[in-house]
Image (cartoon, rainbow, N blue to C red; front, side, top):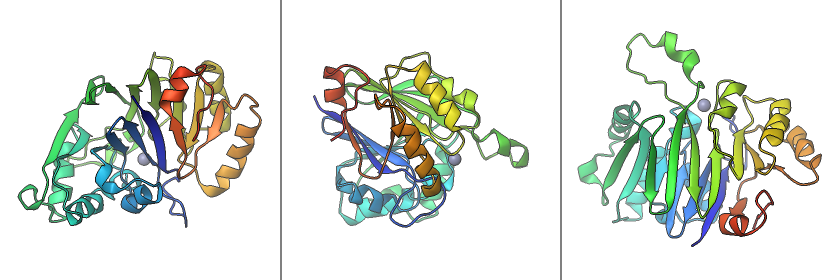
Length: 268
Ligand SMILES: [Zn+2]
């Protein structure tokens, strides 16, 4: 049994040299699930030391460009390397048709691909299992609510997800992009690792998280480079290192975390 989180990108929606939009990989044994696929995702995955052919699927948290605009490019790369095994796209049920339209409008027709593109939809409140021993529970947050009044067509869909991943005896919670600090507390579970975005969250709220989930490691991601400097000091002020600033290429070994005292960092 092996498990790790590999941070492939940690930046906000702002493009920055040498950084990538927020995404990470949950690796469970031989299964590699990419979480989000913004602009430049193929390069981000390669830079993190993972060959894109190793990916089994992608989970799209929401449809902001920094989280899904790289998907056609990633699938094109998989076709170029002549992938033959299926690739799974996990998306909220309200995103699925728009997502297929997006891929088809990029000439990625299912019948033309060298591999099968599997589409699996989920709903808020549901739990699904991409791989035996890996569970993913979906929560709806309010990140996209502010756009609802502009959608005169009624077609857009406004799901934005937070997720709880369970594998290797470890619970990993990821806020995704959120709409308010109340969205930080959507799960009743006590995660061992709590990954929070930092673009819509105050430093005081992150301190509050560390207090509420005191046995968890809080990992900060989705931040601008300027903001990173102040977040570094927030992390440094916690000598038990319960708050950590993620960086491109950072890995957390889940098995080591499960076997060690919960909440202690297990970075490799
Ligand atoms: Zn967003």
